[in-house]
Length: 282
Image (cartoon, rainbow, N blue to C red; front, side, top):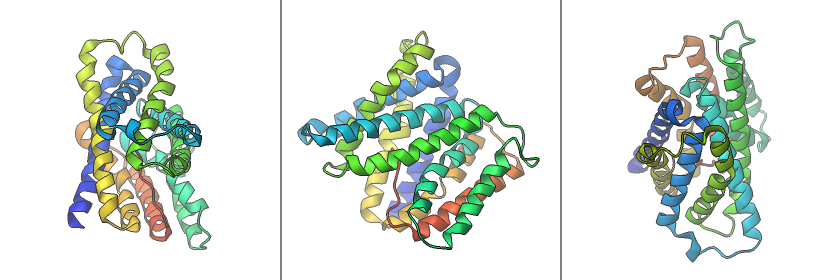
């Protein structure tokens, strides 16, 4: 159990380190280009590791896998558009509202009303309309919230896609669809940048840190720890993102922004304590 906790925390740091490295690629590859590179190489890695062709048989699963992959792709694309404009910790916190909303909508407990209030307070504290907030790009905030919406849809379609398939097979096929769906955006917006051969090792690194490594660690952790414990630990993700943003990207947050992150984390923790099936993200 202790090892599983350490591996899950390592997965969080891997994901956020990958996001920080991806942000470092934006000046040379663009946000859309970086998204395409990450999804393309992550798809290759997952297909090589899970070999989904051995398990998958065409049928009704293909439709669910397409929607699963499409929302996964748009979740990554809009998150990188947000990350291009606002700090990593704030972007992850706002995106985190997607799965939190899904969890709260599935609850009928009166106490969960408190988590809704805390989450709403966290949003208000980082919004430009709030006198408490430091100046943040409203377009970046909008993209982060849209990414959160796609994360919520990702959970919904992910459950359907993995009904008849293993998690690894569904993730590999879904990642391929995500790469296909986002490729036109990468080519249209950053087409002149992404064909630079020097970006290949950087793209592979981001794919490993953001997808292949953390997904494998999360899969192991899920097998060896209760789902509720997994959900509680995942509540640390915004704090991990903020810490990585500070250490790697030198993104210092204001006290108000830290308080907003704390509000969302507390809401997520409270929701996880009463949730039945917390979900991970690829």
